[in-house]
Length: 366
View 1 (cartoon, one colour):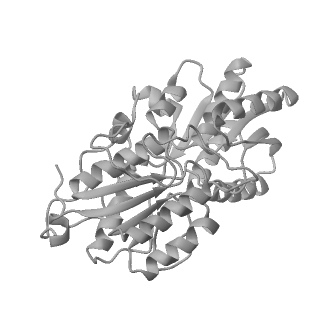
View 2 (spheres, rainbow, N blue to C red):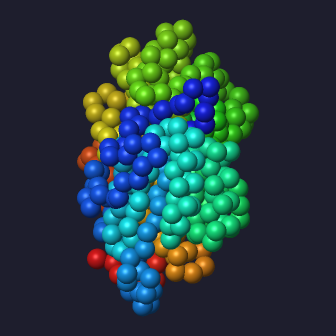
View 3 (tube, one colour):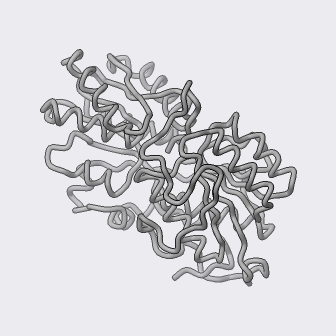
């Protein structure tokens, strides 16, 4: 997914209020997540080591999020909560609700409370790195997802955003024959999107037949609908467009809405990123223009983050960069397989599960 930067006013991505969390407050993890985890109760291997004494009594991990609502973020949290339950970890949740300063304050408070470990989920590097360095200096293990921590002492989890863009663009090229007009959806200042943009920039150089005729993009409290309005204007101004590259699922959903409202489903295809059960519904509905997406399973990534934090608390060695590889998911694949949700997708694409990443040796699988 993406992490936000302050662009004049505070940017808010999707529906940003995390129920039960006011500014600067902490909410304990719910016993059951709003979105069902997309994997079995534990992805870890069978028990091969004794449970560290600290985990027998329970440990506390502060999960400091920049954003909390939307399909991706809800499924990410569901996976994190499920894995925390398996490992006897109490998650203390806080959300910046898209406000980078608020997230930084929440992170500072987690350091002051001396949590056993901290997970930073997205964020703007300039605002979270000072507090990350304080956590490291205080000896608090720290895991960062989709935000550069700024210190080699922290563990970074990445989705390989360049590969995400490469996979979607390879499908776009195959479907268009390597030529045609394309509308691009992008907003600068979001680390994963900036990385995907690097791949898009190189792709255009390598494929001169692909012509970008418009760049659109916005993030606010209703990203998909705002992008839909922009996309309609861009498509009406450029009637020769064959494809839309929208490498974030809220962008892709907005683009799909625009194409359908203009009745251009048979002419224009959309290539996106990220996946959720709701995204699968959009991709497989009749006459959907969303042809392909490249993604990791957000629930799986949440699990990896909690496992990495648990290993650090236990004093285990953890690679300083953990990469969760993406998979290309096509509309045809979903329809042919009768896939309607994440559970079915995981069975069809088992590579979306990565139990070997940050494997916890003392946790038993179900």
